[in-house]
Image 1 (cartoon, rainbow, N blue to C red):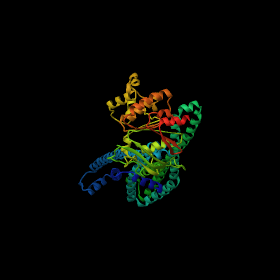
Image 2: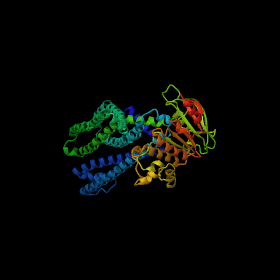
Image 3: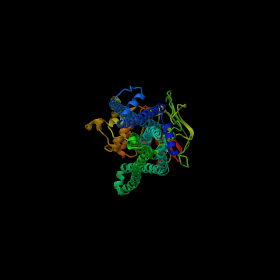
Image 4: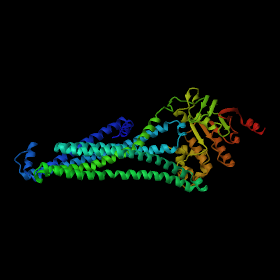
Amino acid sequence: MSSSILSAIQKMRCLLTKEEKVKWLGIIAFALCSSLFEVATASIIVVFVQVLNQPELGEKYLAMIGLADDLSAQRSVFYLAISVGVLYLIKNIIAAVEAFYQNFSVQKMNYQFKGRLLERYAELDYAFYLTRNSSLGSAVVGGDAELMFSAGMMSVAMIMSESMVFLFLVIMVVLMNPSLFFVIFLVGLICGWGLVKGLMPKFYKWGKHLQESSLLCGQNLAQFFHGFKDIVLLGKRQIFIDVYQYYSQKRSHAQALQTATNAMPRLVIETLFVGIFVLVIAILCLVHGTPLQMIGVLGGYLYVGFRLMPGLNRMINQLNTLKSSVPSIVRVYQEYNETAAKQNYLNIPEFQFNEIIELKDIFFRYANMEKDALQNISLCIKKGESIGIVGKTGSGKSTLVDIILGLLKPYKGEALVDGKFTVRSYQWHQKIGYVSQSIYLIDDTIAANIAFGEKEINEERLNFVINAVQLRKLIDSLPKGAETIVGERGIRLSGGERQRIAIARSLYHNPDVLVFDEATSALDNQTEEKLMETINSVSKNRTVIMIAHRITTLKDCDRIIVMEKGQIKEVTQYNELERSKMV
C-alpha cells in the first residue's frame, strides 16, 4: 500500500470511538476465522480428490486423525465426502455472518459518525459559516463522509478479510510446492509493483477530480433551483445549464475512467492464472510420473486458484476504491478536527437575565477583512426596554445584533448579561426569539414551522401564538388549518404571512428577549403597519431589540441607536430623530 492509503486508514481510525474500534477487532476476528475455514476447506478438497483417485489413501488419512484403520475404501470416501460438505457449509455460514456483521458494523459507524460531525458543525462559531459556501458542509456530510465509510471503510474491511484468506491459501501453496510458490510470488510481485506505481496514483487523481466536480455540481444545482425565478426572468437558463453540464461532464469522465480501469485487473489476473496453471501442469509432469499421480495436487491448485483469482481481483478493486476515496477521507478528517478547534458556546446552568445586557468596548472584524465592522461599542440595555437601531447599509446594525445574540465573538471587549454571564451560551440563546428579514420556512406544515424542530407540538402554546400574531383568520380559512403545507421556503404564502409565522415561531418558547432584524423591510407600508401592531402587542413585558430600515417603524421604542461606520453615532428618541430629519 502507498503511504497515502496508510495515512488515510490512520485518519479513519482516529475518527472512531473506542466502541467502534472494538467492532473493528470483531471484523478482524471474523476475517481470521473465515480464513482458517477457507484453508481447511481447500486442504480437505485436495485430500478428497486424491482419495477419489486412490481410495486406499482414505484409510491412511483417517487413521492419521485417530479414526479406525479397518474401514473399507468405500466407507473412507463416504466419510471424507460428508466431511467436505459439512466443512464447506460451516465455512459459508461463517462467511455469511461475517458479511452481515461487517456491513452492519460499518454502516452503524457511518450514521453515528455523521451525527457526531453534525454536532460539531452545530457548535461552530456563526462567523465560520460566513466565510464559506453552504454547499461544502452538505458535500462533506452527504458526500465525503458517506464515501469514507461506504467506499473507504468497507474497502479496508474487505481487504483485511480477503488478505487473510489470500495469505493462508498462499501458505498452503508453499507447503504443497515451495519452488512453484516462488515463481508465482515473483509474477505477483511484478504485477503488484505495476499496480502501486501505475494504477493507484491515477485512482487518487480521479478521486480528487470526482470530489471537486461533485462539490461544484452541487453548488450550481443549488443556485439553479434557489434562483430559478431570477434565472427565468433574466433569460439565463442556458448559462446555468452549461455551467452545470461542464462540471457534470468532468465528474462523469473521471467516474468512467475509474470504473473502466477497475475492470482491467480481472482480465490481467485471469490471463496470469491460465498461464500459471499451464506452468503448474508442466512442472507437475516433470515431478510426477503419470497424470494420475499428480491429479490430487492439481485439484488443490485448481481450487486454490479459482478461490484466489476472484479474491485477488476484489482486493485490487477495493484498493483502487480506497485510493480514490482518500481525498474524501482527508477532507472529512480536516473538517472534523477543524470544528473541534475551540468551544464556541458555553453551558451555564445558573444563567439568569434579571437586569441588564451590557456591551463593553466591543471591537469586531470579519475574517479576511481589513477594517473593523464594529469599533469601540459600549451599550447598556435594561430588561423590559425597547431599543431601535438605525443606520445606513454597512453601518454595522446587523453585526451589533449578532454580537448581542452571541453569534459573533468580538476580538476585543465583552458582551455580558447581568454583568457576569456571557452571551455566548446556550442558556442565553434559549431566552431569545429572533425574526430576520429573510425568513427560513421548512417544507412542512404551518404548525411544524411555528414549533420548528419539536417532535411533539404543544397545542395550547401553538394556539396562543397563532392568536397573538393574528394568524387565526388565515388558518381558519384553510381546509387543513395549521396542518397546511407551506411549500419550500414558504412559497405558497404571502410575505406578510411568512413574517407572522416567523414571529409566532419566536414567541412559541415564550422568550424574554425579542429581536427583529429588519423583519418588515420587505413589506409594503400597509402590511408593515398591521404587522407592527402585532409586534407591539406581543412585545409587552419583553426586552425588544429592533433593526429597521424606516424610522417610523421604531416610533414605540424607548431609545433609538444610530449607527455610522461601525460606531454608535448617537443614542436618541423617535421624536428627536424625526425633528433632526426635518431640519
